[in-house]
Image (cartoon, rainbow, N blue to C red; front, side, top):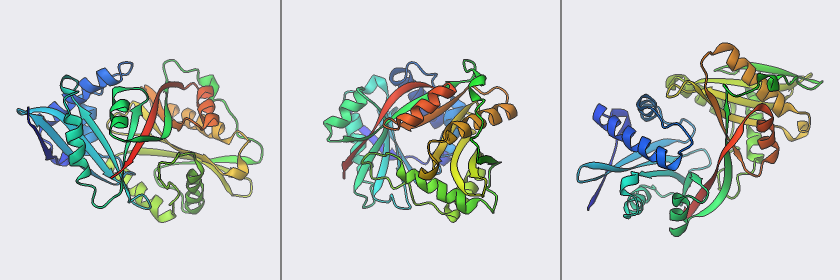
Length: 325
């Protein structure tokens, strides 16, 4: 069977294309993540219409066999210090796996590298067929993360009663950062560069007030509600930050953004206090929320434990895999 791989403009997807993409994604989800609820068609449609903002330009391909959708490839081209990397996500329908289609799709993806020198795959479940496939193609694991999920119906909200330590207060906003805090906010976000990202090559530290303003504007266009809480010292210095998003493609699932505490202020429970306050704030303003998803570096055992104390449970371990192009 010959595989026909062609570029796909997701922003111009027809109803029929959304239907078949949703069917493929659901079939793969049921095999690859059996403990999780497969995405609904509406979520898939919204995902196609609103790509992740922080990962740069998105390219997509559809792969067909005798007219049937056999696989999908998505590539992101990050910028601002990470423009040597392409991030690829390839899904083959479970009925058509182990026939070399994934490898053929990968060749097409790499041909669109635009001079970039490294290809990465994220969220590759440890020990899965996808993990073995990438290793067989010469990829190596450069970072490991854990997916943790808090289910509101099972959570004890009493765990979120975590006052901030003496000498600190919490500042918060929805959407756009106050002008008087945006520079300090950018500085706090730059501490993400201190996080353990293995040898993935991602910089994470190229933050500025201008970049924050661009991201804020992009979120408005995409319909994302982003809430931010800062831990601030009594003399006005920003000591830590946490973010939480509600995305239109699945409004009952919240997605954790950055959480960081500046090195000089660690050991005071600020991460726990900020994230607890965020959960109280979001649930006070929104009914019908189902869960929160957060991804944390497996080596960041402190933050993994903070999440457990708030009611999160570890669902999966993922690898970031990489090889040269």
